[in-house]
Image (tube, rainbow, N blue to C red; front, top):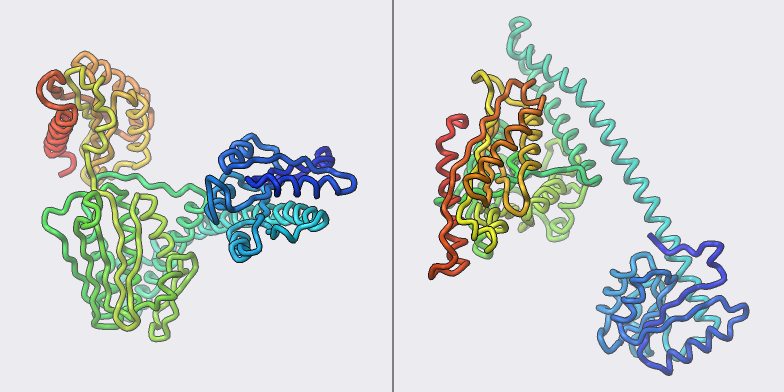
Length: 532
């Protein structure tokens, strides 16, 4: 928040002068002393760090800042102070030969600048007052914008939710008619209903985009990373968009590197990214074109997967390439007669990729198509368990892999388990473990018919038995589990840890233990028939 001078504080305006030249300090102090009805309290710091230390204690109304200090020079000085003095107005002091630098400083966030040698008492006071007032107006404007954004997001969220229920009913009844459950249809009736369903699906996609944007801007959009197969998600995306591509004669193809490792990401969100990028390509590619998805391990960073979605479409100008990831921006393409969306798809893609530790960008030329690139972290069990493989924990001599199987009491192949119940069960397991000794691994695969949670615990057999009983007790109290017809079976498998006293280094032992645990978890996962 900005600094506001309350009525009780109007007698004193606290100024922090960050200046290393004692002559300039004396001159400014004398100028302020000449002011009638003096209400200024001037504090001085001759180094940037000293000024930052004083700012940290609070109570400063305005900063007079020299950009040339012994421990900092140029715009870096302003950037540092601006970051540490949020809401405090800044007035830059500069020499005659540095006026252009001062103008640049104003662009970077300073409220005003003064040229040394051209300052008098009136100009100095006017600049200080102006900086405080201007900063107050900017802070007030910022608060108004935040309030307006909050109201807009609440409105969009409310409207989106209100539209979903009637739209769902429309889609259901149109589907019933298309399936012939209400009687036979003529070819013409079937065509009309297909058009209605296609438009209803498009409207639903727009509503989902609006909801995602409001969630993202209010901090409510979540991602739940787990071990996923990017190849499988690409196949699913192609299946979902095959009809749209076929209508324009566009070929969808993929090229995946051999032995592609799994990604560590949210499958629902990655599917959403792929659908947005591929659908965007279909929209802007001429008939008989081609869209290709390629994935490989990044050459720049082997801890990431590198994906690209390439089309043979109209391409994007350099100016548009810089703006397409902004909300509500749409590419102007007169040759494309397809219905436009809301201009939110790529903005959502960027948000989802960044939330999962990756980045997204585009390379394109007008008339030569576009290629969208994005990266995702590779799933590494070793990275997840290494924080608990400390020398103290390794001294225990063993570790345990706790398996928590959440399955239907009666096998019903057509029944899909409520994701919310599984999430609550996972939360119970998370609260049952000790953060310094245990780690709950992310979901390894789909949970349509059940789920297995794996916990790696640094303990002996007795400790593993205690942890198993604790998890069993906590899950037995979860009423949602019983109400959903689910049961939890908890078991454990021990893993020996080599002694740290042998010839192996600590790093070698950690790698060996991590590798053994990873192999064992993978073996246990393969044995789980629930996922087959």
